[in-house]
Image 1 (cartoon, one colour):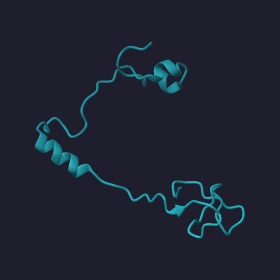
Image 2: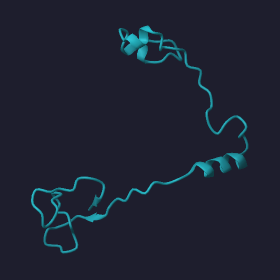
Image 3: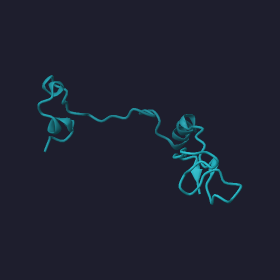
Image 4: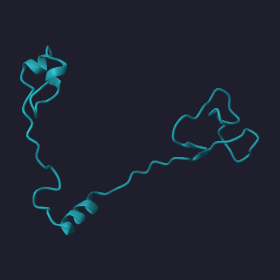
Length: 95
């Protein structure tokens, strides 16, 4: 077991050249963001809203269902209807 605050790689790979060079250091946790000046609820809320965001990642764009259903593009076995040897295997399929 390592000392509290010691990087865990010291136990995992003791023969590593990087470890021999001294990469194992005692970690001293400190706050990175929003910083020590943001202590009240209003400023914390302001900081939070300034960092919020979203990413456009569409899911459920390929309808899955029975092969005889004209509204589906992917079969329950993930085959693309109307094509041979093509399957859609990602988050664009939602039953």
